[in-house]
Length: 320
Ligand code: ADP
Ligand code: MG
Image 1 (cartoon, protein in one colour):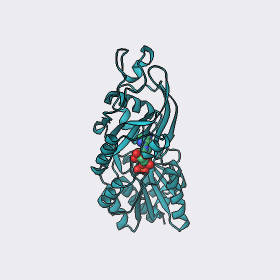
Image 2: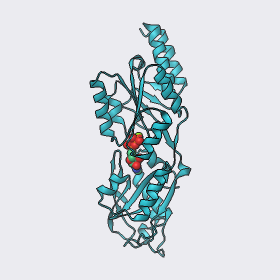
Image 3: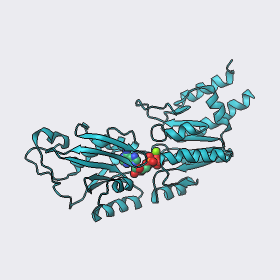
Image 4: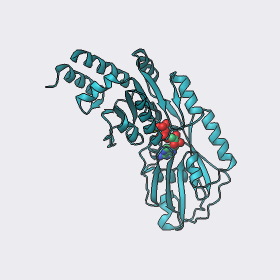
């Protein structure tokens, strides 16, 4: 029989927008001594209105011509010269992101009234880096395109013109997230987004630490963003960690004797979530798969994780 206190615990959690797959997960959580958090989407959120596009002023009218059949993909008309504008960059970016379930992709898609990815084929999501695909340009040419961090630029062997480098670096030094849009052999634009800390992130870290738990953050981002986060949260932040490496590091922590709770993004961190002793997936409930997770977090605030941990400890104490 399921002890009454566990039933009460599960009920309390569900009122807070937390879905627990089975009672064991709550009891396992009570034993966790290490909490690994993902950054983007988990501790931070991206607000769609904060999306800005900077087009390289020297970007060529890219060797593609607008024909009637393809024009709508870029909100272009037949009479247009094929120049990159903010709007066209956004349409291309949103089309590429249509297949990704990353918070950055989501914020970009929200900028476009109607995302049409008809012109994109062979779209491939590269976890922790971005999306690459083949674009049928208005006019019919097939061009390799991509959106994401520097790894995407490298992967496409693309040139990053100086104005874009400057804009990207400035955005990063201001604490904004910058992703690059590549068309063919060159970057044509930088899209910047503002990441905001979710409410209760710092409180969650403090409360976990007070309970003798070790919180730490693993992020795919490097440099400024990670340092700032470390300062703001007062916990170690491991930067430049790909989703695959997150799973490896969880395994490594377990090999050192840790009982690991992983709090991540249900899609991009699925491997680490599945590997952890207790896997928690943040989700907005919009049909996002949370199969790998023992616990789904629908509540937008970060400190529900600490609430849940307290509840788990209390439930376990009553049962034992
Ligand atoms: P985190 O670990 O902080 O959640 P990720 O590993 O998911 O970050 O991503 C790391 C970086 O890779 C992002 O900051 C972004 O620059 C890039 N990236 C990943 N996925 C995408 C995507 N779908 N579109 C654009 N950029 C992406
Ligand atoms: Mg993430």
